Amino acid sequence: MKAGIVGLPNVGKSTLFNCLSNAKAQSANFPFCTIEPNIGVVNVPDPRINKLEELVKPERVQMATVDIVDIAGLVKGASKGEGLGNQFLANIRECNAIIHVLRCFDNDNIVHVDGNVNPIRDKETIDIELQLKDLETVEKRLEKVNRAAKTGNKEAQVEKAFLDRIREALLQAKSARTVLPQNADEEVLMEDFQLITTKPVLYVCNVDEESAATGNKYVDQVRELVKDENAEVIVLAVGTEADITELETYEERQMFLEDLGLTEPGSAVLIRAAYKLLKQQTYFTAGVKEVRAWTINIGDTAPKAAGVIHTDFEKGFIRAEVISYEDYVLYGSEAKAKEAGKFKVEGKEYIVKDGDVMHFRFNV
Image (cartoon, rainbow, N blue to C red; front, side, top):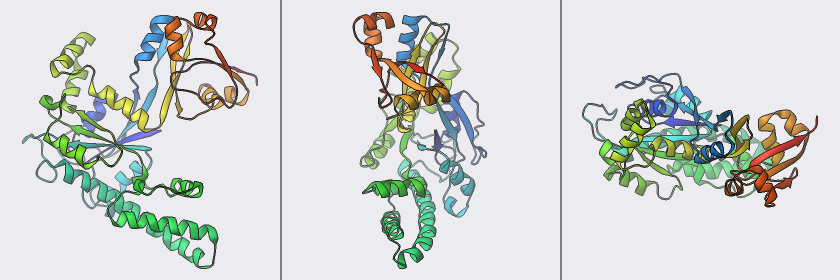
Protein backbone atom coordinates (compact mmCIF):
# COMPACT_ATOMS: atom_id res chain seq x y z
CA MET A 1 0.00 0.00 0.00
CA LYS A 2 1.47 3.33 -1.09
CA ALA A 3 0.57 7.00 -0.58
CA GLY A 4 1.70 9.32 -3.36
CA ILE A 5 2.76 12.95 -2.76
CA VAL A 6 1.30 15.14 -5.52
CA GLY A 7 1.07 18.82 -6.34
CA LEU A 8 2.28 21.49 -8.76
CA PRO A 9 6.05 21.92 -9.30
CA ASN A 10 7.90 23.79 -6.53
CA VAL A 11 5.30 23.43 -3.77
CA GLY A 12 7.67 21.46 -1.49
CA LYS A 13 6.89 17.84 -2.40
CA SER A 14 10.46 16.55 -2.59
CA THR A 15 11.53 18.49 0.51
CA LEU A 16 8.60 16.94 2.35
CA PHE A 17 9.52 13.49 1.04
CA ASN A 18 13.09 13.98 2.31
CA CYS A 19 11.74 14.92 5.76
CA LEU A 20 9.58 11.82 5.88
CA SER A 21 12.03 9.29 4.55
CA ASN A 22 15.48 10.81 5.02
CA ALA A 23 16.03 9.47 1.48
CA LYS A 24 17.33 12.81 0.17
CA ALA A 25 15.37 12.99 -3.07
CA GLN A 26 16.65 15.70 -5.39
CA SER A 27 14.93 19.06 -4.81
CA ALA A 28 15.62 22.30 -6.67
CA ASN A 29 14.00 25.58 -7.60
CA PHE A 30 12.70 24.63 -11.05
CA PRO A 31 9.87 22.46 -12.42
CA PHE A 32 10.29 18.75 -13.15
CA CYS A 33 13.26 18.28 -10.86
CA THR A 34 11.67 14.95 -9.86
CA ILE A 35 11.18 12.74 -12.90
CA GLU A 36 11.35 9.14 -11.72
CA PRO A 37 9.20 8.63 -8.61
CA ASN A 38 11.16 8.21 -5.39
CA ILE A 39 9.83 5.64 -2.91
CA GLY A 40 10.54 5.87 0.81
CA VAL A 41 9.70 3.26 3.45
CA VAL A 42 8.84 5.39 6.47
CA ASN A 43 8.51 4.35 10.13
CA VAL A 44 5.09 5.13 11.63
CA PRO A 45 5.60 7.07 14.90
CA ASP A 46 3.67 5.24 17.62
CA PRO A 47 4.18 5.95 21.36
CA ARG A 48 2.63 2.54 22.17
CA ILE A 49 5.69 0.68 20.89
CA ASN A 50 7.92 2.81 23.14
CA LYS A 51 5.80 1.80 26.14
CA LEU A 52 5.96 -1.89 25.21
CA GLU A 53 9.74 -1.60 24.82
CA GLU A 54 9.93 -0.07 28.31
CA LEU A 55 7.91 -2.95 29.82
CA VAL A 56 9.39 -5.91 27.91
CA LYS A 57 13.01 -4.69 27.46
CA PRO A 58 13.51 -6.64 24.19
CA GLU A 59 16.75 -7.10 22.25
CA ARG A 60 15.32 -5.13 19.31
CA VAL A 61 12.30 -3.08 18.28
CA GLN A 62 10.68 -2.99 14.84
CA MET A 63 8.16 -0.25 14.01
CA ALA A 64 5.33 -0.34 11.48
CA THR A 65 6.12 1.28 8.13
CA VAL A 66 4.26 3.03 5.32
CA ASP A 67 5.42 3.52 1.72
CA ILE A 68 5.49 7.15 0.55
CA VAL A 69 6.04 8.01 -3.15
CA ASP A 70 7.37 11.37 -4.38
CA ILE A 71 5.82 11.96 -7.82
CA ALA A 72 6.82 14.56 -10.44
CA GLY A 73 5.01 17.91 -10.33
CA LEU A 74 1.92 18.17 -12.50
CA VAL A 75 0.97 21.16 -14.72
CA LYS A 76 -2.06 22.23 -16.76
CA GLY A 77 -2.52 19.93 -19.73
CA ALA A 78 -1.07 16.88 -17.94
CA SER A 79 -4.15 14.84 -18.92
CA LYS A 80 -3.13 15.50 -22.55
CA GLY A 81 0.51 14.67 -21.90
CA GLU A 82 1.85 18.18 -21.12
CA GLY A 83 5.00 18.35 -18.98
CA LEU A 84 5.47 14.89 -17.52
CA GLY A 85 1.70 14.35 -17.49
CA ASN A 86 1.47 10.79 -18.78
CA GLN A 87 4.21 9.59 -16.44
CA PHE A 88 2.71 11.48 -13.49
CA LEU A 89 -0.72 9.98 -14.06
CA ALA A 90 0.66 6.45 -14.47
CA ASN A 91 2.62 6.80 -11.21
CA ILE A 92 -0.33 8.10 -9.23
CA ARG A 93 -2.60 5.37 -10.57
CA GLU A 94 -0.28 2.85 -8.86
CA CYS A 95 -0.73 4.57 -5.46
CA ASN A 96 -3.57 3.78 -3.06
CA ALA A 97 -3.99 7.26 -1.57
CA ILE A 98 -3.02 10.85 -2.37
CA ILE A 99 -1.12 13.36 -0.21
CA HIS A 100 -1.85 16.66 -1.99
CA VAL A 101 0.70 19.38 -1.12
CA LEU A 102 -0.45 23.00 -1.51
CA ARG A 103 1.84 26.00 -1.30
CA CYS A 104 0.53 28.29 1.44
CA PHE A 105 3.49 30.64 1.93
CA ASP A 106 4.87 33.76 0.22
CA ASN A 107 8.53 33.76 -0.84
CA ASP A 108 9.77 35.78 -3.82
CA ASN A 109 12.90 33.61 -4.02
CA ILE A 110 10.94 30.44 -4.83
CA VAL A 111 9.23 30.64 -8.20
CA HIS A 112 5.61 29.61 -8.59
CA VAL A 113 4.81 27.83 -11.83
CA ASP A 114 1.71 30.06 -12.29
CA GLY A 115 3.35 33.30 -11.16
CA ASN A 116 1.72 33.87 -7.75
CA VAL A 117 0.59 32.00 -4.63
CA ASN A 118 -3.01 30.79 -4.79
CA PRO A 119 -3.66 27.37 -3.20
CA ILE A 120 -7.31 27.35 -4.35
CA ARG A 121 -6.31 27.69 -8.01
CA ASP A 122 -3.49 25.17 -7.53
CA LYS A 123 -5.87 22.58 -6.05
CA GLU A 124 -8.33 23.09 -8.90
CA THR A 125 -5.52 22.68 -11.47
CA ILE A 126 -4.61 19.27 -10.05
CA ASP A 127 -8.24 18.22 -9.57
CA ILE A 128 -9.23 19.13 -13.13
CA GLU A 129 -6.31 17.25 -14.69
CA LEU A 130 -7.10 14.12 -12.67
CA GLN A 131 -10.81 14.43 -13.47
CA LEU A 132 -10.08 14.86 -17.20
CA LYS A 133 -7.96 11.71 -17.18
CA ASP A 134 -10.75 9.81 -15.40
CA LEU A 135 -13.28 11.17 -17.90
CA GLU A 136 -11.14 9.77 -20.71
CA THR A 137 -11.05 6.38 -18.94
CA VAL A 138 -14.82 6.37 -18.36
CA GLU A 139 -15.66 7.34 -21.95
CA LYS A 140 -13.41 4.62 -23.37
CA ARG A 141 -15.10 2.07 -21.14
CA LEU A 142 -18.55 3.38 -22.12
CA GLU A 143 -17.72 2.85 -25.80
CA LYS A 144 -17.23 -0.87 -25.09
CA VAL A 145 -20.12 -1.35 -22.69
CA ASN A 146 -22.70 0.56 -24.79
CA ARG A 147 -22.64 -2.08 -27.50
CA ALA A 148 -23.26 -4.91 -25.02
CA ALA A 149 -25.98 -2.91 -23.20
CA LYS A 150 -27.90 -2.44 -26.47
CA THR A 151 -28.09 -6.22 -26.96
CA GLY A 152 -29.94 -6.52 -23.63
CA ASN A 153 -26.99 -7.73 -21.54
CA LYS A 154 -28.11 -7.02 -17.95
CA GLU A 155 -24.58 -6.75 -16.48
CA ALA A 156 -23.59 -4.29 -19.21
CA GLN A 157 -26.72 -2.21 -18.53
CA VAL A 158 -25.86 -2.00 -14.82
CA GLU A 159 -22.29 -0.96 -15.66
CA LYS A 160 -23.46 1.59 -18.24
CA ALA A 161 -25.85 3.23 -15.76
CA PHE A 162 -23.06 3.50 -13.15
CA LEU A 163 -20.55 4.86 -15.70
CA ASP A 164 -23.10 7.45 -16.83
CA ARG A 165 -23.46 8.71 -13.25
CA ILE A 166 -19.69 8.95 -12.85
CA ARG A 167 -19.33 10.70 -16.23
CA GLU A 168 -21.96 13.27 -15.24
CA ALA A 169 -20.12 14.04 -12.00
CA LEU A 170 -16.77 14.42 -13.81
CA LEU A 171 -18.35 16.76 -16.38
CA GLN A 172 -19.49 18.91 -13.44
CA ALA A 173 -15.83 19.07 -12.23
CA LYS A 174 -16.57 16.69 -9.32
CA SER A 175 -14.24 13.83 -8.45
CA ALA A 176 -15.40 10.22 -8.92
CA ARG A 177 -15.25 9.67 -5.14
CA THR A 178 -18.38 11.85 -4.85
CA VAL A 179 -20.37 9.15 -6.69
CA LEU A 180 -21.22 6.60 -4.01
CA PRO A 181 -21.82 2.97 -5.07
CA GLN A 182 -25.43 2.02 -4.29
CA ASN A 183 -24.95 -1.74 -3.98
CA ALA A 184 -22.32 -4.49 -3.86
CA ASP A 185 -22.17 -4.77 -7.67
CA GLU A 186 -21.33 -1.08 -8.00
CA GLU A 187 -18.68 -1.38 -5.28
CA VAL A 188 -16.97 -4.13 -7.31
CA LEU A 189 -17.26 -2.07 -10.50
CA MET A 190 -15.80 1.05 -8.85
CA GLU A 191 -12.79 -1.00 -7.74
CA ASP A 192 -12.44 -2.42 -11.26
CA PHE A 193 -12.54 1.02 -12.95
CA GLN A 194 -9.33 2.09 -11.11
CA LEU A 195 -10.17 5.79 -11.38
CA ILE A 196 -7.63 8.23 -9.98
CA THR A 197 -10.19 10.52 -8.32
CA THR A 198 -11.68 7.69 -6.24
CA LYS A 199 -8.47 7.51 -4.20
CA PRO A 200 -8.74 8.98 -0.67
CA VAL A 201 -6.93 12.33 -0.30
CA LEU A 202 -5.17 14.24 2.47
CA TYR A 203 -4.24 17.92 2.04
CA VAL A 204 -0.92 19.30 3.32
CA CYS A 205 -0.70 23.08 3.57
CA ASN A 206 2.99 23.97 3.28
CA VAL A 207 3.40 27.17 5.34
CA ASP A 208 6.23 29.43 6.56
CA GLU A 209 7.82 28.93 9.97
CA GLU A 210 5.69 31.61 11.67
CA SER A 211 2.49 29.82 10.60
CA ALA A 212 3.53 26.30 11.65
CA ALA A 213 1.41 26.22 14.83
CA THR A 214 -1.61 28.33 13.85
CA GLY A 215 -1.84 28.34 10.03
CA ASN A 216 -2.53 31.48 7.96
CA LYS A 217 -5.03 33.03 5.52
CA TYR A 218 -4.13 30.50 2.80
CA VAL A 219 -4.78 27.57 5.16
CA ASP A 220 -8.16 29.09 6.07
CA GLN A 221 -9.03 29.25 2.36
CA VAL A 222 -8.10 25.58 1.86
CA ARG A 223 -10.11 24.44 4.90
CA GLU A 224 -13.17 26.31 3.65
CA LEU A 225 -12.77 24.84 0.15
CA VAL A 226 -12.51 21.19 1.25
CA LYS A 227 -14.97 21.25 4.18
CA ASP A 228 -17.44 19.04 2.28
CA GLU A 229 -14.82 16.54 1.07
CA ASN A 230 -14.44 14.62 4.34
CA ALA A 231 -10.67 15.05 3.92
CA GLU A 232 -8.09 15.91 6.58
CA VAL A 233 -6.04 19.14 6.29
CA ILE A 234 -2.57 19.15 7.89
CA VAL A 235 -0.50 22.31 8.38
CA LEU A 236 3.23 21.77 7.91
CA ALA A 237 6.20 24.14 7.63
CA VAL A 238 8.09 21.82 5.29
CA GLY A 239 11.29 23.89 5.14
CA THR A 240 11.40 24.09 8.95
CA GLU A 241 10.71 20.35 9.25
CA ALA A 242 13.75 19.80 7.00
CA ASP A 243 15.85 21.88 9.41
CA ILE A 244 14.57 19.86 12.38
CA THR A 245 15.59 16.55 10.77
CA GLU A 246 19.16 17.88 10.44
CA LEU A 247 19.50 18.38 14.22
CA GLU A 248 21.54 15.63 15.84
CA THR A 249 19.92 15.12 19.25
CA TYR A 250 16.36 14.54 20.46
CA GLU A 251 16.79 17.40 22.97
CA GLU A 252 17.74 19.87 20.22
CA ARG A 253 14.75 18.84 18.11
CA GLN A 254 12.36 19.22 21.08
CA MET A 255 13.70 22.71 21.88
CA PHE A 256 13.21 23.74 18.25
CA LEU A 257 9.63 22.39 18.31
CA GLU A 258 8.82 24.17 21.58
CA ASP A 259 10.01 27.47 20.06
CA LEU A 260 7.49 26.90 17.25
CA GLY A 261 4.68 26.07 19.69
CA LEU A 262 4.57 22.39 18.62
CA THR A 263 4.67 19.21 20.74
CA GLU A 264 5.92 16.92 17.95
CA PRO A 265 7.12 17.25 14.35
CA GLY A 266 4.34 17.84 11.83
CA SER A 267 5.87 15.05 9.75
CA ALA A 268 4.92 12.55 12.51
CA VAL A 269 1.30 13.74 12.36
CA LEU A 270 1.37 13.41 8.58
CA ILE A 271 2.80 9.86 8.60
CA ARG A 272 0.11 8.66 11.01
CA ALA A 273 -2.56 10.36 8.88
CA ALA A 274 -1.22 8.66 5.72
CA TYR A 275 -1.29 5.27 7.50
CA LYS A 276 -4.92 5.89 8.47
CA LEU A 277 -5.75 7.13 4.95
CA LEU A 278 -4.54 3.78 3.58
CA LYS A 279 -6.99 2.07 6.01
CA GLN A 280 -4.15 0.37 7.85
CA GLN A 281 -3.73 -0.43 11.53
CA THR A 282 -1.22 -2.05 13.86
CA TYR A 283 -1.04 -5.10 16.08
CA PHE A 284 1.98 -6.01 18.22
CA THR A 285 4.04 -9.03 19.12
CA ALA A 286 6.01 -8.61 22.33
CA GLY A 287 8.79 -10.92 23.50
CA VAL A 288 12.31 -10.64 24.88
CA LYS A 289 13.80 -11.16 21.41
CA GLU A 290 11.68 -8.50 19.74
CA VAL A 291 8.83 -6.06 20.20
CA ARG A 292 7.34 -5.47 16.78
CA ALA A 293 4.48 -3.52 15.21
CA TRP A 294 2.81 -5.35 12.30
CA THR A 295 0.76 -3.59 9.65
CA ILE A 296 -2.61 -5.01 8.58
CA ASN A 297 -5.71 -3.67 6.86
CA ILE A 298 -8.57 -2.48 9.07
CA GLY A 299 -11.05 -5.36 9.27
CA ASP A 300 -8.52 -8.18 8.81
CA THR A 301 -9.20 -11.46 10.61
CA ALA A 302 -6.71 -13.21 12.91
CA PRO A 303 -5.50 -15.66 10.19
CA LYS A 304 -4.88 -12.71 7.81
CA ALA A 305 -2.92 -10.94 10.53
CA ALA A 306 -0.91 -14.11 11.19
CA GLY A 307 -0.10 -14.35 7.46
CA VAL A 308 1.70 -10.99 7.63
CA ILE A 309 4.35 -12.69 9.80
CA HIS A 310 4.56 -15.80 7.59
CA THR A 311 2.22 -17.47 5.09
CA ASP A 312 2.53 -20.74 7.07
CA PHE A 313 0.97 -18.98 10.08
CA GLU A 314 -2.14 -18.28 8.00
CA LYS A 315 -2.28 -21.68 6.28
CA GLY A 316 -1.96 -23.65 9.51
CA PHE A 317 -3.77 -21.20 11.80
CA ILE A 318 -5.18 -22.82 14.96
CA ARG A 319 -5.88 -19.88 17.28
CA ALA A 320 -4.78 -16.41 18.33
CA GLU A 321 -3.93 -15.47 21.91
CA VAL A 322 -4.81 -11.81 22.47
CA ILE A 323 -4.28 -9.15 25.13
CA SER A 324 -5.42 -5.60 24.38
CA TYR A 325 -2.68 -2.96 24.47
CA GLU A 326 -4.49 -1.12 27.26
CA ASP A 327 -4.66 -4.25 29.46
CA TYR A 328 -1.03 -5.14 28.73
CA VAL A 329 0.11 -1.69 29.89
CA LEU A 330 -2.33 -1.57 32.83
CA TYR A 331 -1.04 -4.87 34.30
CA GLY A 332 2.55 -4.36 33.18
CA SER A 333 3.25 -7.76 31.62
CA GLU A 334 1.72 -10.65 29.72
CA ALA A 335 1.81 -12.89 32.82
CA LYS A 336 0.00 -10.36 35.04
CA ALA A 337 -2.60 -9.65 32.34
CA LYS A 338 -3.25 -13.43 32.17
CA GLU A 339 -3.62 -13.61 35.97
CA ALA A 340 -6.19 -10.80 35.78
CA GLY A 341 -8.21 -12.75 33.21
CA LYS A 342 -7.42 -10.35 30.35
CA PHE A 343 -5.97 -13.07 28.09
CA LYS A 344 -8.36 -14.13 25.29
CA VAL A 345 -8.21 -17.10 22.93
CA GLU A 346 -9.72 -16.25 19.53
CA GLY A 347 -10.51 -18.29 16.42
CA LYS A 348 -10.54 -17.75 12.65
CA GLU A 349 -13.43 -15.27 12.68
CA TYR A 350 -11.79 -12.83 15.11
CA ILE A 351 -11.43 -9.30 13.70
CA VAL A 352 -8.12 -7.90 14.94
CA LYS A 353 -8.35 -4.59 16.82
CA ASP A 354 -5.80 -1.80 16.57
CA GLY A 355 -3.21 -2.28 19.33
CA ASP A 356 -3.88 -5.96 20.06
CA VAL A 357 -0.83 -7.78 21.47
CA MET A 358 -0.92 -11.24 19.90
CA HIS A 359 0.58 -14.74 19.77
CA PHE A 360 -0.41 -17.23 17.08
CA ARG A 361 -0.65 -21.01 17.32
CA PHE A 362 -0.39 -22.84 14.03
CA ASN A 363 0.38 -26.25 12.57
CA VAL A 364 1.64 -26.94 9.02
